[in-house]
Length: 112
Length: 116
Image (tube, rainbow over all chains, first blue to last red):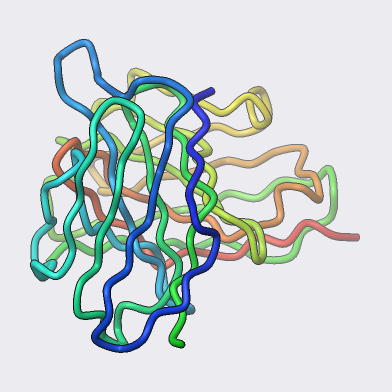
């Protein structure tokens, strides 16, 4: 199975600051069709995960432009600028290029 | 508005069975593959099983193969997960989710506790 390694495990950020989360894959996430199926989710306390970014860099419906995704191949990054209180929670990356789909271990974003 | 509502969870003894349901609304259910994903208490996310839009193809993680069965009723817009021979390590919140290369939706989850 593809292993996704997220760093850091936890992140202390001040309101209005910028956060950066890394997701590294044990193998390339480029599908045979040329697409890269790496998604990012946020799970707020007591809630189910919500999709933020799909296919590396595309914001899902209703997601503010403070969230941006980048990367290619095996290295991917989620950046959150101007952190707001509603951004707190655990962030997960997911790959659906290879079966079975797998998740990263999560990064907890907390207020400094 | 897309809605996915899971039900059927609860406390069950090891070795017993439980059947989860996920009622879908707000989209054409029969057009979408579906998944079950679980999260053990204080742990990360783990994909469990998937089913194609027609129900003709199903996929499982190795640890549940032969014990869990995913199915769907497109006429009722409902997804199911039949869980047999349950083990303590199956204790988790189970989420149903739509499949999509350009986005997906998740339910609120249902808790399953396997304990004597």
